[in-house]
Length: 188
Image (tube, rainbow, N blue to C red):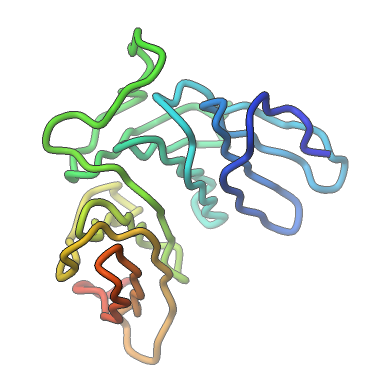
């Protein structure tokens, strides 16, 4: 099963029935865990796919390559419907599709996105990029905030539900610190 990438697999996400894999071959693949068959190949990433998340509530897949998060609607022929950038820009469709070079580095003003996480409610997307974490509201696919405070690149993060309406965001950085914070905006 999951034989289909031409280069090493760097990340994955799964549900009871679906598996999503991201690879150095610049693609993300969707697999049926029951049959072991590939369902779709999400292509056109500018470089390695380093993080992938699936939101079962919205049917959206988020895949990260360089400073871009591609948003795929798997309910609609696995089409890239938006491209989000580390600086908070939102571009309709696939902003990476027109790339003519083999590998794209981050554009000026953009930072490598190292990892993404979804809120437990499935309403927010968090992206570790540069020394901060960018936050998007998924119902509108719009940036709504940013968590700062690290003096080195944020390499990893996780998000947990709490008794309050605000998510608990835990980040790890190259500055050797782990920071625990509440999201600045409550999720639904």
